[in-house]
Amino acid sequence: MQRLRKFCSKCGKEEDLETPIIDNLCVKCYTQTKKLLEIPRLIEVTSCSRCGAISIGNRWFYPDTSSKARYIIEQYIASLVEKETDIDIENLSIELDDTSNKWAKIYVDILIKNTIRYTIENTTEIKWKKSLCPICFKRAGGGFEAIVQLRFMNYEDRVEKFKNEILQLFHDYVVEISDVKNGIDIKIASRSIAKKIADIALRMWRNVRIVESFGDVRRMKNGSRHGKQYISIKIINPREGDYIVLDGKAYIVDKVYENGIDVVNSDGEKIFVSLDELLNMCSKMRKRTR
Image: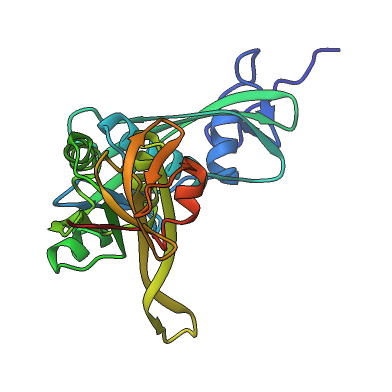
């Protein structure tokens, strides 16, 4: 008995090895009729006109290369692709237009009812807007979230190296650097960047004590509390001949070692103070001028 040939009820295409019929439809018409995938036709991306950060899906990202920015956009589009229950997505790839980045080509390899494989192609338009990101907006208005207060007993060349490294790495986040007595104050537009700056200080100096606190705390409309973060970085770097006060007593630094110092009191008595002891006493220790 001759087998009856099947045809697509929509386009009339006859079934063959490359064109199976599913529910009286060829694969192409089946995917178009059933709407197996929801792929966004349009997405909006906001770009910061000052630093190049991008906002997508109500979240700001700060990629340092164009390839990372493209990857973020591609991943966002991929997150919006939704499927029906009778298919599985085996692979999804996205290619952004190289010239204008205004279009994204989406390729989705699907498995229909665990038997038939098919690739769906679609295009998503990318609409770009310009604005200032929250960090650049704060910088433009002189606003900041944190202050890093670096203090030292004696100035050394590493302080200048520290400042240059911060400006090189975090230029877009530094609102202001000001010189103060025995140190510098750095206003930062981001708390997370302020903590990274503290990590740099720990890497650059061994004898460092860091204390974090909050000031100017205000209660927001939603009930949460918001304040400026203060990160105090104290560098214990005494030199021979320095007059210092430890626990209310005056001493002269006689010798400086890697693990501590020898100090002499007014009676000529010499004692050794370890680096750990110096760090523990730093809140009560101060350098005194002659």
